[in-house]
Image 1 (cartoon, rainbow, N blue to C red):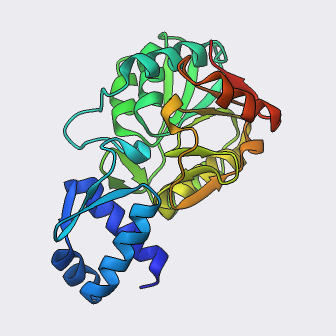
Image 2: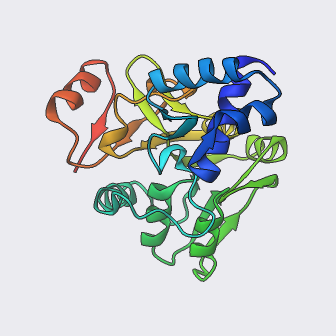
Image 3: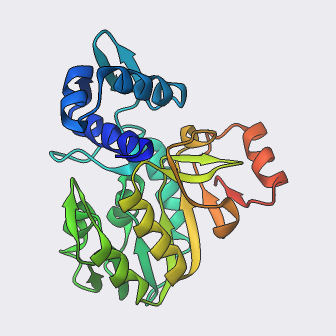
Length: 251
């Protein structure tokens, strides 16, 4: 297993159980404890985990946009509501839109009126939210379940065949140099397919994700029409992105 794939696997394990030991990782990945400790040190440098005695724990509980298997994350609820309210301005009746998986896009789904609309989504919570809105046509890709999302080559192939007008994309990090980033290749490939199939792409990200970076870049900042965020984004940070030619919408 190459180092990048080990990093992804370590993060996937941490997302599932929040904490892991060096011995457990060594057994599961079939590498030495020395290699695991080196991997953990590199991931800690990126701010993705925190090393503790004998192992590591997740640096943030709601990274990735992948939600708990038990219930959606409500952390930063006010900011997510603010972003969702802005996003609704860009959605018109009869649009064909895609809602990427995540807690912010889930909030968009909750606020959608029951209106003629086609929504493409791989997020099981969003699907559940929209099921009772009979005017909305749900389009769900295939694939295997990863916590609250469907992923894999089937999902990628399916969305690649669609004509989507507007996609709302989430990310773990939004970075001036590294763009939009995520942890695992499965979700990166799906996001890439959404972007390629969409006439317009809107990034949705809480202010605290700006300046953050995960393992894989799935899109450059220039690939989105705008980034919708909350009003807590520092003015200096917003200016840096606007100076780079990126449209930032905060109200």
